[in-house]
Length: 216
Image: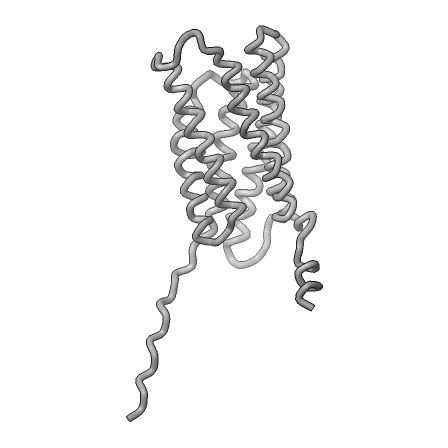
């Protein structure tokens, strides 16, 4: 009696690339906060976006990157999704009176941004293995965070130059948003039709030749 064929493994439906969503959520929220920091737009218009688009949507994109086995994307999107949610929550606590009036808000913001600048530094270095478009996002973000945390520390110490630096951080933040929007737009259009429409550049370095030489 012939053996029955073994059951085929279940087919997993392909997962859409979550990176364009994560980049778009980051870009739009960064843009709206940055135009406020640049003193071009009113305060607080970014808080809802930070909770739901820069926060929740970007965090979901990070979780989907885990499914895609993309450690870099998962770490970046989950971290910055949490960044936006945490930042918005702090502002809501301040507005709700849950934070003591004696707290130096500018100084606290400086420490918050300094901590994320440390994280962004190594992510910027590792983004050189992704592509040039993604590197530009982390490079401009690095400058934005450094300028903003210095500006916040100075403002918290009563130096008027701190406010000027926060404005500068807003200008650079707009450039960061533009870089992220471009990378997002490229990810969307390049995934449609199977051809590259918007260039994203090659990685600055990759370990494929090294792996090949070790394998040989």
